[in-house]
Length: 178
Image (cartoon, rainbow, N blue to C red; front, side, top):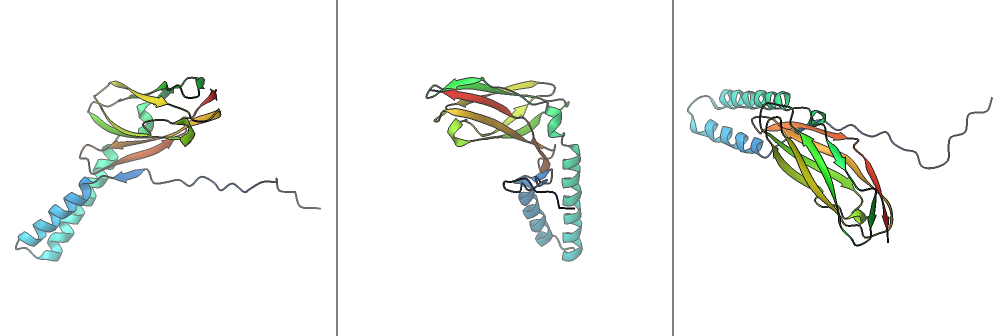
């Protein structure tokens, strides 16, 4: 029989999964400190360098394992359904720290530039068990429909060398009228 027809339009590639791990700027500083230690100590350089690198790898793994899963922060966004052109409105991103330690969390909202969403990226400190309400301003420059999301969250581990990252399908839509 005839082969089934493919639907018209461009082929959509499956969304590529990115690793859920990120490294912080503290890691290169730790590597530099290790290199200085290797240079300063009179021990065999290769063995000492290998030992320091193994310790750093173990610390990074520990940091990633101890970092909370970003989805556990139960993010929620409140966005107005309708906004007016040239009149800024407020939106709120809420995050909850479910752990017993203070967390450093970075967030990035994806939005089309014409929505004028500010800030797109931010870092906040969440106290143990606390909620944070992060204010966002929407200042659209074009009429029509717009969407905010997905949301990418990064949770650093307790040592600050690495952490977990996840892009969550937190999507909100709004309409902009003149």
